[in-house]
Length: 173
Image (cartoon, rainbow, N blue to C red; front, top):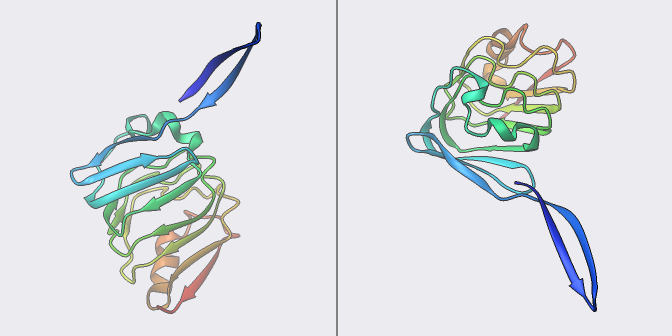
């Protein structure tokens, strides 16, 4: 990750230029979970079980790359999302899908992710939410999709954590 200077010598002429180099990064983020951040900014959490619990966003293994994260893919077997897990991923855009398997989402997990447009919750069982999971300043957040059977529970649980302009939409499974 970073810049690399390349020098080309051809027919007696020398030219140098700088290119941005991005390597796939990866590591462990739980007993049976791994993470990979690839060149296009996709952060993938793979495996099964709970994410390691982090006390601050600086402890998150991908914290130095937060601004490079554009897309998030969460394993269908992920059970918990750590506090601060994606806090400050300001270039994270589009739709975030929270799998059915997730039973809890820690404090500030998605705070300052100001470009998320949609959140999809797949489970009819509402996860336990820490404080400020979603920042009410997430002004780009337009829609929160939830199962119809848990609509009222999600609205109640997320009240005050999301912008008043975000619309809750009940979805049939």
